[in-house]
Image 1 (cartoon, helix red, strand yellow):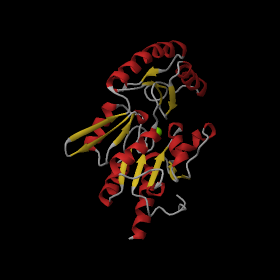
Image 2 (cartoon, rainbow, N blue to C red):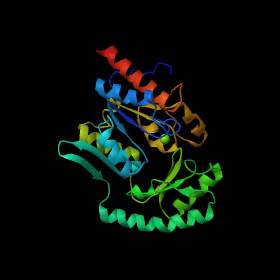
Image 3 (cartoon, helix red, strand yellow):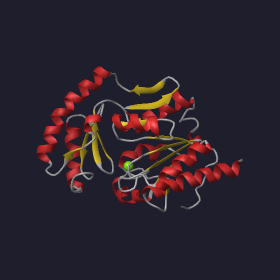
Length: 262
Ligand SMILES: [Mg+2]
């Protein structure tokens, strides 16, 4: 990776996507997991920000060497505290139940109109969204098919975002960036708006776009290049390596600049 400019010496918090950013072909490599631990031990605070479901995030918050996790594209965050697992939702239980009922109708329409797609295997563990698999456990769909899934969600007034494996659709007003701002304020007591220089973000796909646009220190792992033609906001820096190896480059770059400072 080219030395980034400006310097990363003030970065204390790294928000990062998980799929195809930390993970590589569906696994977290030894190298990438080691990067998480090295960051942890060096005091670089990591918060994964993912489209993955509440069920996964419960595990991540409890067991990974991270401060906490933002899940379902910003619908909630979870983190371990002295009082146990803290779960902060954007919408309450009643609202979430209503959202899920409305998504049921959309689910039938998508399965009927887009042959070959599937319901994501982790759907049962979701609080907010309907995740349509176009690449994880099904044969990869065409770009047009993926666009049709998005169109159906949007025709019902739902928000739809494309990750590297799923189209996630939901009701409610939230996204990864909104929840990252809330997390920074609630947990760190630091304004992401006023102290942008203290934060970095790393991701790989179109659902990371609001983050790429907002963070001064935004990184895309090299596999983001395949999505650039359909994205309006590109990351400021693109790593040389793909996926977990690219994520490791980002952690190393931040730790290196922080060391230079001390
Ligand atoms: Mg991803």
